[in-house]
Image (cartoon, rainbow, N blue to C red; front, side, top):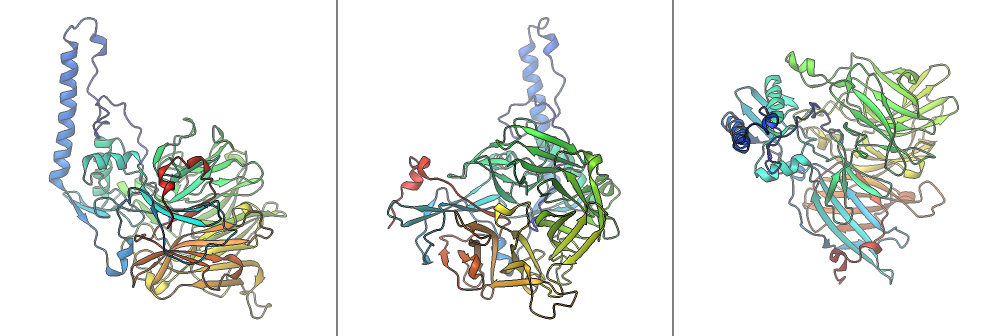
Length: 592
């Protein structure tokens, strides 16, 4: 979720019916009228009957549209002045040269692209609908995904060329609404239960899908290919140079479920570990994709008895880490008039440790204190223990959008679980001890995923700025030193790890922070933190590059963006070679 936290629910995963309508129409999933194929040989007038069938189906589509247009009113959700940078922006159309750079890009900075995903609703913003069935609304983590990319290309003389581009991820549902030129999918997550149920039904009858595929949460690489993802659908492969959507990625037809926003590369093998969560059984399925991305090596029904919003999956050298916490999607609860998504701190919370190639019976479950953990910092093995570190809250930011954060229970703090695989013992603690620092969106040096690491980097929540937003704002960055204690009496049990902060000026907030390692670096923190930063007083967006070893010091590089960049979710830095793309005119622009 950003809290990343995506509208993972949305797809009720009702199977699509075979289409008997022209694929050129966005309404190509209406239930078909009986086919006339058996009559081909005895009815010479069959072509006429087929035309009649198509006319009847088109008429049904028009009647459904007329019903929605008559009884559902789309309403823009208003934004407070302090929420102005959550508002969407237009696509650029092509990459543009960035010329305003304060400081210098480090000589040993790698060539590549810093790319961040985030919601960018089309047709003006997030919507609510009023109807005879009640009201339903988009929640703050919805909105079609837009990629924002900064390209760092070095010339043969050693100087840098920096380009910026943005583009919507063109999912199947994005294409449908663009073709219709109006908001068409009814919001189906938050609101009156009857309104949500009617939205499910009408969306499915009209489009064969109960909600939009937003692809707005993260970007990842596997086997040299790049993907945009949100966990209510499979990923979309992206051309990293143009940001064009290439195709849906279903691992050659082997993966037919949603796909976690945070798949992990398995240490040692390079295989990709993923998780698919759905509101109907099987509620959660873990999968392992081959290192070349061509086949599904392992598929395991975890046999959960509820649909828990497990936003992230963890890995170690031998295990997969499953978070089964009491933020749940429950269709039966919705049918009874309750909320589709609800956090219940009275329900159980547990962490499952699954052997890499094991089945559901081999999972060892550990009961832990109830919480919501959307993001895992890292997980690794330490003797008989599996150590899991994450950003944990006592409440949830889902569903929003009118949730107040004044009580801070929905804000995350860094937490550690030590799970003893021999004794079953659980040890828990707040990593920062008695120092209350709210933070989320953790990143580490990617070379240390699944193994013991010394450092992590997080975005620091500004509780005051976030209190009335319904969504957190991040006023700084933090570096956590797991092997160093904070100053103070080392005998005190509440003592936490050392935390070094890099705070921004007033009314300035970041999103999409990523770690950029120095190629051939000798130490774990050899590298930089890069992040999109926005000043709400000046309405100027920048990209900041910060030396990870001089974390609280001055910014190394400030790149002023030629356009406003809205707040978003997760970012990543991808090392890429521009040589194969020299034919692309985008990269032939003249550097002044």
